[in-house]
Length: 185
Image (tube, rainbow, N blue to C red; front, side, top):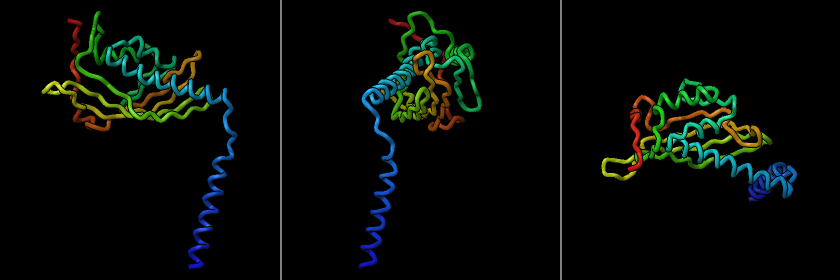
């Protein structure tokens, strides 16, 4: 019994010393905390704008979310620079017709984990692609995620490196979304 008490006390001392080692970092002052909160919100905005741009085929907005030397990685493809990223979108969806309204799909960002370090940040997030099912209710057709590196460029947060991961369905099983578009009724 005495040995068990000594082991528990030793474990407690170890955990307390480990905890104190983790708290040796100086706390942020008010300005630093405010900057951190503003950066976090700005990065969230980029993540949400990304999906809004895709859903609405706003290729100019989509491209503007990437740094000048930004790259998008999907599978083995690495697409670098604004012109090439835009060409990728046109290749997938075709040019966006005037008055385009998306009635077919919506992509959602979920659970972003943001780590900010000065003018750089890393983000891991999940994504769902939903479309109308046969009965008119939304169905998930794709579950994936992103590994991102952000940079503050010209005072704005941008994707420097975005890696797209598809988890479900497996890439070989994925149906190709048609290059159709609808305009407002």
